[in-house]
Amino acid sequence: MEKPLNNQPKKSIKVAYWVSTGLLALFILPGVFFMNSPEAQEGTKHLGIPQWLALEIGIGHFIGGLILILPFIGKRIKEWAYVGCGIKYISALIGHLAVDGPVAVSFSPLVIFGLLLISYFTYHQLLKFKSNG
Image: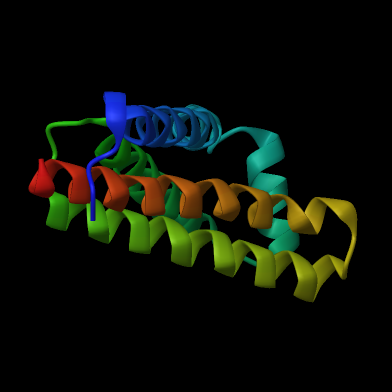
């Protein structure tokens, strides 16, 4: 495979990675500060999630978000953070569909999961460039 001139694909991949990962961080990181709010507690109660589990998921999700956004974290740890976030968003989609049915709010986890996939695949493209170049 030939190397691209002016490294353009690498730059576009890098931009796609940081934009998708930055947007993910905007969804993930602030959640830890609001997980004890009355709205969050009502939402978890509505879905039938115990409060202790909601706190555990919230803290784990925050840590996973930090791992995804910090560039100095190792590859293997990032992989597990992607897996954990992916499971959380798929579970959220299933939970919303099971409780609320196919309403618009049920699909917001799917949109965030899409951002996660973009971040994941562009992350691996950057790793390929790093190992080849």
